[in-house]
Length: 170
Image 1: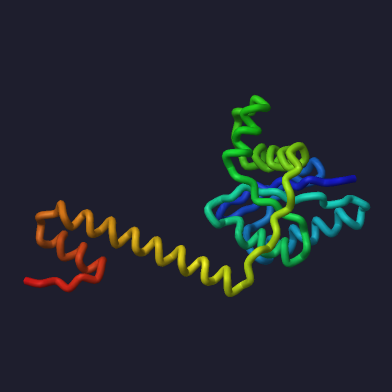
Image 2: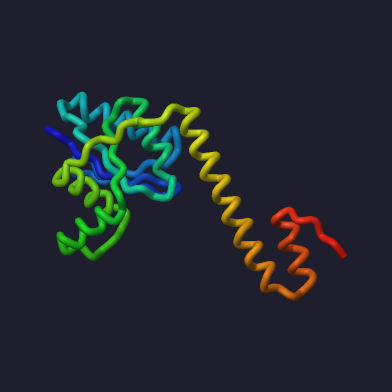
């Protein structure tokens, strides 16, 4: 039987809908290792893992995607808006982790999105993350600079300048 696995990802847990069962794993390397063992068990029972799907969750899905791709498990990271539109089309208003996992599984089965390809090397991924971090710091510095223009209390001005690395002058 072809299986479409839905995973609701959070910071600490993975709520998994697999072969009409709800499972829970920690969102850690050992937890994902247990998930991989469960997927292998399903394959040994003559089930085919057609696709594992999860929503993008602010980066909490990265470890899951990396480890599944390393183990040649087809994984697709679905855009949350598409899954939510799918739920609305089905008339589903309730939202729990278990419901979301089942919904993501059904979304994968019906919409048949392609598995994501691992496009970046480890060094390219590192470079991309460093560029993103640089942009975050630049945005934060600009926000602090904008606050500085509006502030009149010396202690707050000193704090802002300290935060953005500008020397305090008496």
